[in-house]
Amino acid sequence: MNNVRFGIIGVGGMGGNHARNIIEGKITGVELTAVADVSPDVLKKFPGQKTFTSGDDLIKSGAVDAILIATPHYSHTPLGITALQNGIHVLVEKPISVHKADCERLIAAHTDKKLVFAAMFNQRTDPIYKKLKGMITNGELGEVRRINWIITNWFRPNAYYGSGGWRATWAGEGGGVLLNQCPHNLDLWQWLFGMPKSIRAFCTYGRYHAIEVEDDATAYLEYANGTTGVFITSTGEAPGTNRLEVTAERGKVVLENNKLHYIRNEVPMSEFCKTTKIPFSTPETWDVTIPTSGSGGQHIEIIQNFIDAIQKGTPLIAPAEEGINSVELANTMLLSSDSKETIQLPLKAEVYETWLKKKSEPKTK
Image 1 (spheres, rainbow, N blue to C red):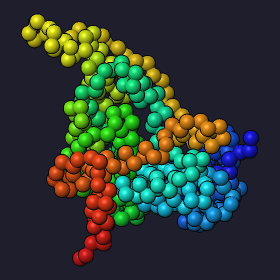
Image 2: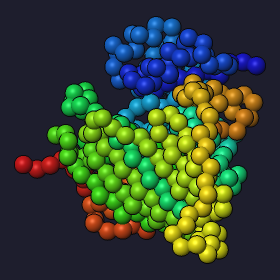
Image 3: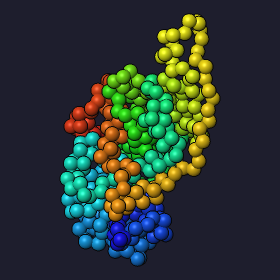
Image 4: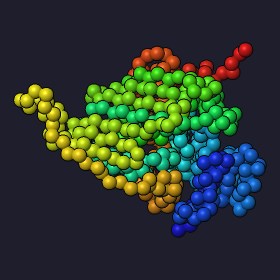
């Protein structure tokens, strides 16, 4: 079987790491044949590949069968559409687009289902999240009642925001912590728990940094079955916290410090509430530490899965079509905060797109 001829668009940051992983032979069935970047100095680091200063030129060069898009967020949509329309398999970094309307345009371009279209949601490979996913889908936890995720270990100093003119701007990035750091967490949220029916959020623009976008957010989510959730994130807190707590009929699961701790009810809580005759009583519990090890294959596993899907038809870990969900969650949180209203889902894509365009307009002095 011939190697997949692979191109990467944007090799100055994460794209460069992906390129090195391929060059070093960490992924099988693939050969890095071309790279593109706007910086000629960056391209000099890849003397063994064809180089382009335009992603469109790479796509149309005939040098690749598949690409990975690792450029600033807004360009994910046009580059992805061009690649799909030219018969190229596409793997796109997170988020797949900046806003829901662009997600819909990108997904609509995937008309040839023989083309593999995937997203870089590498945290789905982490054993601790895979274990929790299994506990939910196989019924071990019973119906989920409450979700609380504090994910504030995304601390970034001012030097980070000063490292690129596109960072932390509406026009360059389309948002802050929700669009840059948290797409992985929001993807895991929807992957584990599904999409809510409504969101009320509170975001602060430049609370900790001199930036125009949000660096702090708290959101309250409601589900059709009555389940509720709270999502808290920030790039301004140190030391930060990463604690996911899930309360369900069969007990409570806490993910923190790379450990999964399960306090299991012997009797489901709703059943116990209805049947016990003893006031102030609670269900008997088992204290269970569920073993997991390592962090999974992460980026390498996602790229390998993408290549295997092309060559062998292996099911994707992260189909790109699912990437619209994390974008919709982030968009809804921002719109809810700005409007000071609870937003019902599904989000009206055109409403958010109009709002974002206004936020992105140059400020008049």
